Length: 242
Length: 244
Image (cartoon, rainbow over all chains, first blue to last red; front, top):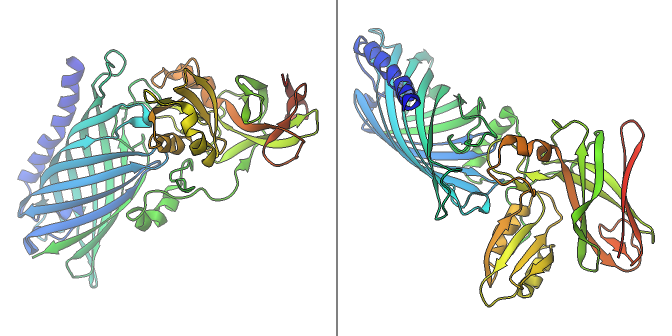
């Protein structure tokens, strides 16, 4: 119980700091901290992306709506071809972008997300699968730079994730394969690039830190397809729909 | 039942290399192994004819295992350690020893890289799938009670694919990957220390006149099969077995 609450305290601390920073910030412009064009210029963002991890690859799609605050619904597929394993994720997330200065050149953004990951099923032909539920809170920072007709939005973020992994099987696996939780951190860097239009391209990278040690008895208590401290490169294309 | 194998092991990829693959990742999530395996010549502490996987008859196979001197040694999926196998009646083959356990990563469960077990449904016999096994380049062995059998494959990196594919064959109840005798999938890391370093490979066995270099060990009753390996120091490690 103590470890569980310690984990949640780590999760809860970041949004409190972020909310305080955002509350002191000026005009909002949602999704700038995602590297995208502010949502005030349209109604929704539709985005699709791909990422390459050490052993797996992922694709995802999302729809975002909002103004100052925004809400995103996303679906993702993570596939590890070598072991024929796939996990499907659905998630909902939200955030608020607060401008740090009147010229709106810098932003600070608290954000939070919930997700459910189903799979892989029949992992390594064991007839055992996994379900993972996750909550995260984080803080993003963004700068907006105009260089001729091109706008660059470099963004950085960190989020604390609390993950609970549950084995899914008809067999009695209690005692050696129990539901378990862990807390880890994801650091992200990206650059949104747009040339005046509604389309933004955003290459970026994410690095998970603090995952359960690989090779340990409960190393399944980690996001599927991710490895400790790996540099995962990805690219997202987002279209702003007016 | 094509021969395309999706998802053979590639080991770790460089992040910059992955960046260029990103556009393709959205379209395809697997790729083919390219090029021959890389030859390595590590010091070994042990080389032997496997005590269990030893089916020296026509249509059988024999496996060889080795333990590196350094137990922290790890082969990637695209590396092997060549050994020479000589049969006293004349056959000589070169066999690449690969990792014994797959996949080549620390996280997640492991299994033996070659071979899987198969259970037939009630009323079916393992002999019913003999043609399927042969068509995929495998060999069936150790049939128990008619319903339970082992299937050995000889190409690295395709074991999981083949075992999954076999589940679609008529009469098959399930297939299961094999783990080293004293390690279950969920065993603690200490159990996997030596197994992570160990090397292994099987080679098909037939009876008949020797055809050196064809990838099949041709033997006759009374032959001696010898596996040998030249250490980096120049010393030669070997082990032998007599064909019954």
